[in-house]
Image (cartoon, rainbow, N blue to C red):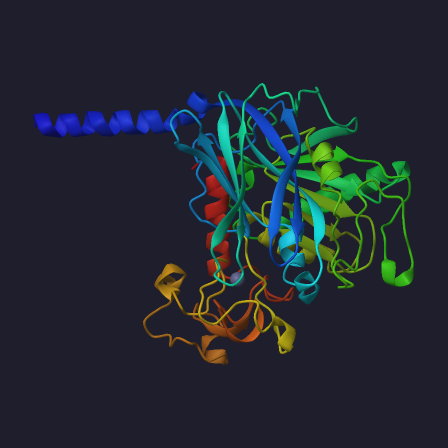
Length: 428
Ligand SMILES: [Zn+2]
């Protein structure tokens, strides 16, 4: 009995210390670290260029360690005095997407990127990692000792002057909620009312889909009224260029419908006005397109007839690191997911380590690989084709919003991944 009491006391102590880690190591504020991600296929550098203090921390104060190891980039924060890992986060970036293009074998380029960590109380060691696409492993690229009073950190009260408001949720409870910060691009001053309507149209549509429907009381919707000089965005293939505040553009990496921005300094300056676990940029155009990058940002155009569905699809990438479940027959994607390695994305598999994926969700009566015939259209299995590859990569279901916009919703595997991510962010 005594031993049991001791064990309980020990457990109580252990969990108390664990739960108290945030306040031991961090202020309830954010340290934003801007860095330049540069190089070619190899070598590759991640070099700090700027640091800013933000007045709040919107992430969880209990789930500090990102145990998934998702993302093609990763940051780890260690307490410098004890060497203890106190925070980590995975994310994707435009550099890592560009690095997959053949031109990265011959050229070098630089991209501006941002990662945010809770503001440390004492000196921390921050390690930057990037995934090697040959081995699929994360490799350390740089490390920095950062003290909370380092001269390079800016302590401005705010980093942009736009108006903002909370459209849904509870403005006092952002550490225990998924905070989505909306930014406007290509909306002039006279279009701000339209922007607000577009935000409402988008998030209310997303709340009709699971798991967002079940978790809407755990979500905050913040709107930053970022005004552009002109309506619209850049469409390079038509030689159209607009003076929009976030410099979004179609034709990213030569893909006409791929809508992104490389102006991450501005994106995060505007987002810094409000608590944000996710940043969503609405682009005022009727041309089809969008982009969603895991723990980085999402964009979608707003006035195409499919925009609301693109909005939800891209958020799947950005929130849970979901892969595209569609595929092509083109050889240029042949080495995207090597046959011998298991991709990290939760909703595709090469069957190399299916146990670590959704195998437990496949019923005994369903064959793996699963024939893509009507008999199995409504069950979870492993259907060939996904992650841009028609062969060798498998997806969980016949259809899913990550495969095609005509799908009735996310497949059970994607739903589960999204739900787990929401729980992580809100501290459940
Ligand atoms: Zn899916």
